[in-house]
Length: 329
Image (cartoon, rainbow, N blue to C red; front, side, top):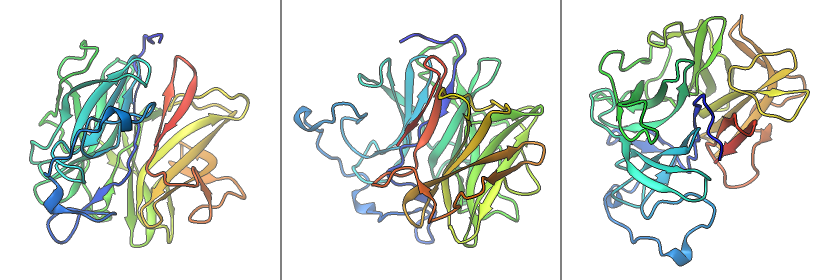
């Protein structure tokens, strides 16, 4: 595969199930949790039963891969100790063709006060200076969901084998009085408009699903906008939001920051209450920090599903070599 000179990083959220806080032991999930099995080892999958063209670890629980352009890097949420959700780390495997994989050491795991109770899903961005940054949700010592960042220890290492979490600037975003700190997660890939970088974080206010928008000029200090990018009543928690441009004049994919007259935007969210993914196509107004679905687009449970089957919390990425946008789930 041809290697692009400009690195691209993105999150492929392949969340079979995503975790949220609980009143019991600090961690609840949208599915049933089995604490007694979290560290119970499973048998290694025999070659006869392995998937042929889908990424699969040798054993135990997996969710939330991320891909890195150049060679493909999957930083996926993984339980190294058991076959159910728990003990989650960001494991790391690489591939040149998305079929054959090399497993590396985990890249991110709970270690700091701002993520000691969990290193959950997130996204990543390669900025114009060529430096990649991972944005992820951490669960802090108080059980609150906060947004953190990690950077490569050595950006010249093509395998990106080691990542560090700077103490300066972490956590980079915390819940304010408007935001419920137990439903605040899954930061997106950053995109640029009018000299600012932008990210979304999924949440809910009561029964209203929300995509909060945060902006930064220096990629260090992030400020919540006066209103969310978009919100819809009676849709519940929005997990793993995905926001990207699509062309109306050709079939090639577009980079996250692309803004032109022939561009529409897609907002895709995973609804925790239905366990399905829904999307709308509409217009993004960067000067107003607002997204408006096109007329006739149904925004909510009765809207367009990405896949009409067992498919949840996917994530798209832009492939600049093949000029395509690919959705993984």
